[in-house]
Amino acid sequence: MIASSKFASAKSDHAQTRDDRASRSSTAGGTIDTVSPTFRLGAVSDEAEKKTPLYDEHVRLGAKVIPFGGWLMPVQYTSIREEHLAVRSAVGVFDISHMGELVATGAQAGEWLNTMLTNNIAKLDVGTGQYTFLLNDDAGIIDDLIVYRLEEQKYLLVVNASRIEEDFAWLQSHLARDVQLENESDRYAGLAIQGPRVGELFQALFGDSVEMPARNHIARFSLGDDKMGARKDVPPEGLATASPVSGSSVALLIARTGYTGEDGIEVFFAAEDATRVWQEILAKGDSLGIHPCGLGARDTLRLEMCYPLNGSDLSPAHNPLEAGLGFFVDLTKSKFTGRDKLIRVKEDGAAHRLTPFKMVGKGPPPRPHYRVFRDGNDIGEVTSGTLSPSLGYGVGMAYLATPVPKAGEEIEIEVRGQKFPAVIEKKPLYKKS
Amino acid sequence: MNVPEDLLYTESHEWIRRDGDTIRVGITDHAQAELTDVVYVELPKVGASHDVKSTIAVVESVKAASDIYAPAKGTVLEVNKSLESDPALINTDPYGEGWIYVLKVDDASQLEGLKDAAAYSASLGQ
Image 1 (cartoon, rainbow over the protein chains, first blue to last red):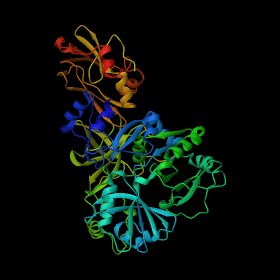
Image 2 (image 1 turned 120 degrees about the vertical axis):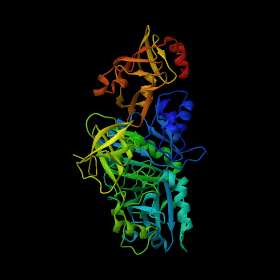
Image 3 (image 1 turned 90 degrees about the vertical axis):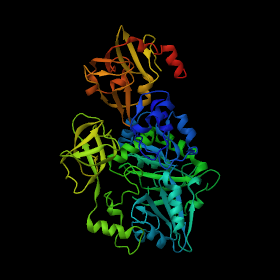
Image 4 (image 1 turned 180 degrees about the vertical axis):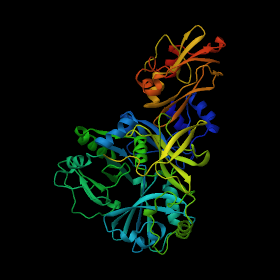
């Protein structure tokens, strides 16, 4: 099993290089070799990968399963391209149960989180969320995450699967008095439902009179046997109460967020309800053309939008300003981890900048770790790359030495010793027509 | 999975159609199904010589690039130019229109270790 066995034998946090190909091909007993897997594995130790509550559903649907961030996850069910295009044109559902849920509570929780995260939590009303970064003291990125204010004194952090333990340990070690931090990741399952027909699916699930939360808002709903008694009126009570509301209905937290560039929602609920919610969504979405979608499509969709992937585009070696994500950093806050360094970076200018590009003419798709050249000089390294299913050509993002070339200017990407032409692009790479 | 009786196979999921000391090579139905969505093929150069088990071509899907190794030492006689404009031929017709290259083999004894259809099928667990 060419690709899947390669992924299965990979244990590194970094893209596989030629050095470790020998061991990988011997594991597979074959020689068609995966040179550069799109999916870097998160902080995977030697212990066995975890399964989400939907693992059996994925296998039943014929998904190819790979280890990712310490989890066994579906990379695709039918084809990355097909699943990708389903999200762009109809609707797709992704298992995001591997992602982590950390919950901070207490009278000082908001104030404390504001010293740990880059965006400004003071701007969050109850029932809203924001994209933000968790940095180390040198402003290197530990994780990118969404923080939701569920109640006055209760916050939910949805973090990357491979960073759950690290985030939790870092936050614990900096915990303020009178703030409680819980890692509730194992108790909860999650689905992302993304695509232009998500509104129709939402109505099929909850009835015509119930509206989706507004963009970046989160609210509590209930999914029952009869026509959903959606509890839009109920304020978000937090995940701690997201256990079955009664014998026949399921409590859900639904946020109007996503990682695809399409309209969409992310749904969180108790792990034991996962199969039921998954099957209900696939059944109600059938007439809308819903596709179950794997990590492959998730990666190509996010890359077309230039949304960064932690472990590829983001790492402790880079700060949010280099990643071009200063919008999610509030330097007017008087104190947060990494602030001093970011102020110096802002004054001196970042040394590198994460920059989108596209390939020109016939050529191989770009891949992580390919070198980037301009006028014969090495100016940086690709961190994400693929053939864009929506656009039909190769696209990617690379950290380039500043000053980076302007949009439209030519660069070259080195692939297996040969240079191929590319041009600098603006974010996003894919613009909806 | 389709495993034609009249071909030879490598452990690395290439098929070989042998005609004396000339071989036509592609990847198997199983291999294309695993790779899915082939988006780019790096073909060898006609006239180039390759050692046994050296990388002779690269097949790229959306998710990854995979090396194709020469099953024997030889010289490239012909390459499938159609794959430059339509790499998905490897998915739609792996044993026909999706062939990758033709090699003139220096030492035909290097082909003796190849699997027949029954042995290859068995290796797939079929």
